[in-house]
Length: 73
Image 1 (tube, rainbow, N blue to C red):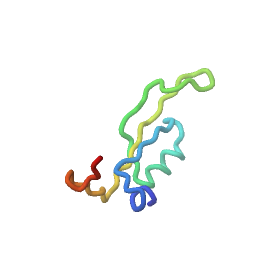
Image 2: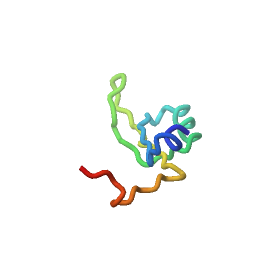
Image 3: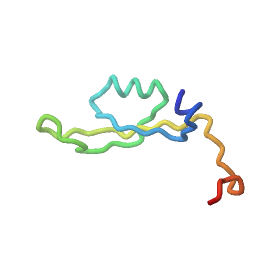
């Protein structure tokens, strides 16, 4: 995955409406998990709707750069 192998991201986050079942299944297929629910998240077509907060953690997290190895100013 681009985020893991090239960008070395530790965490990816997204928000998806709770009634978007196809989207939720797709995100779960790629390792995202539901972390919480935003109640009354948005006004859509005259009604408030909920949304899930989802995240994916890199299975092989990048190693932190030791303090002495960081660039100095």
